[in-house]
View 1: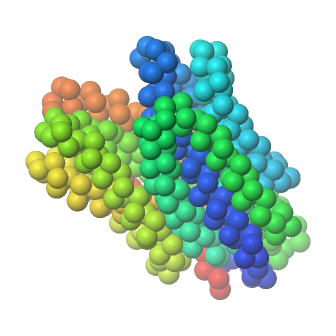
View 2: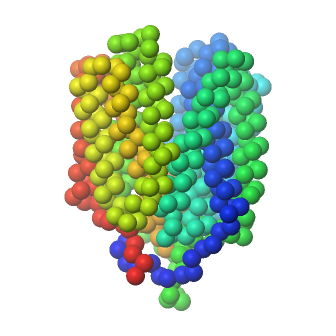
View 3: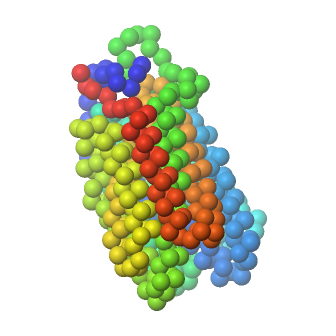
Length: 412
């Protein structure tokens, strides 16, 4: 079935307010939990007298597990009888891994904690998307994904403030205690989502068909779908262009205004998060009205413009304003990635495995971005590096413009 064929009419899902609110708060608190890792791990292990080599080794292990676990994580969710149970187990595993860091910060335990956290994270993204699709169905999923992005952005912002305050007033290890405690309201919010309202066929991307002999597409047929492969390639280019921009810009800001660098960098993080929180639901609605391609073009154009401005703007304070373009890109792709995967995997029964394919492309692009941009910056200067990242974004824009088909489905 091609991406442009109409969706077979089916009764509109009517999830309860309790389930929808439960999903909102689950995503909010999960973002809080996930914020407890990342940079805080390096800070905490440094206070425990770990060397930078040891810290880098642990972070690399987590990154490798997160990369290779994307497709298996999606396949696990596709095979699961209960997406809610999978999500609950993953949250519990992340809570345990947080305790591992703070209770016994020795190399074997920390490696195990990093591995457990990365593996659990590989199933959480697909599980959230599956629960969302199972609740509201394919025709309302655009706005639902936009709402998901809003609550995730709000959770990230609140958690960063809470974690930073705890780390400053108490200790860096308190961040992981808070992370463990936040797993409790996360699980309580998940429990409010009613299992019976999550349609398992929709959750796996296996929509009802009028033909009685309709059946799921095989994984091999799915991975040969041209729109999925093109989209995965475009996301790899997106991450290749985007991954290094903020870290590279942070270094430039520190060089130009070391005193105000922490404040400016914090502002550069807050500005796009605020834009995502405000605009993501609108992105979901516009995706259904306009189609997916115009918004994809907008997201890549904003990224290319951001790279050009980073290469040319000298005032470190104006760089904060440039981050508005990061907010546009983030708002578009936080909604478009799961939405387009839902489009192209429609009827396959492997929606979450398809998410894993795109997630793998995301990981590869992000990993290569910092290495390549760092090398170019060292050899030729930051302006050349930013220009190169802008050129990569422009390549992604061209790929969407000339090759990527529209994937929105009509209801006719």
